[in-house]
Image (cartoon, rainbow, N blue to C red; front, side, top):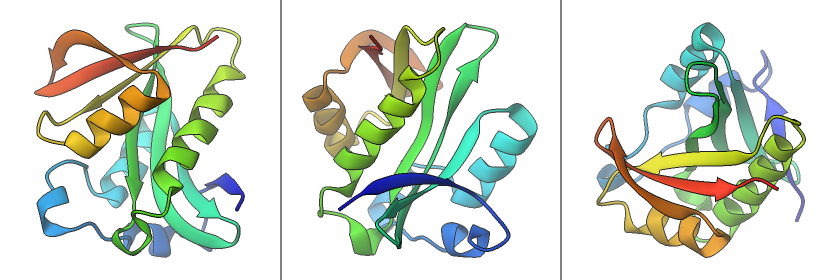
Length: 145
């Protein structure tokens, strides 16, 4: 399996916004259509996550000019594709992509406090709890180098 991050285009945007989550997960991640608009108007990189030729998820990441931090703003794997290792593989691909930027020294990610799956995934990859809450979300940090 090869995980790739592909641009949102005329050919795939409708599939990306149709990716679904379980009802109990819907409060953890903003809708993909919103994140695509946010990336367009606020900056950053909105990308479709593919496993080989299959769309499995969505991510939005980038640099916050105000704080100087690199953030993974959104990471979601569609309901039908969850539990197959795509989230972990996608997270590694996102981190590797971000590390290609010479000014990327740390990577931040945040999540809803009750999202134990995200907490365990991020910690298992090496993200550490910063002890801060931003906009109601727990903030983790990973050294990028």
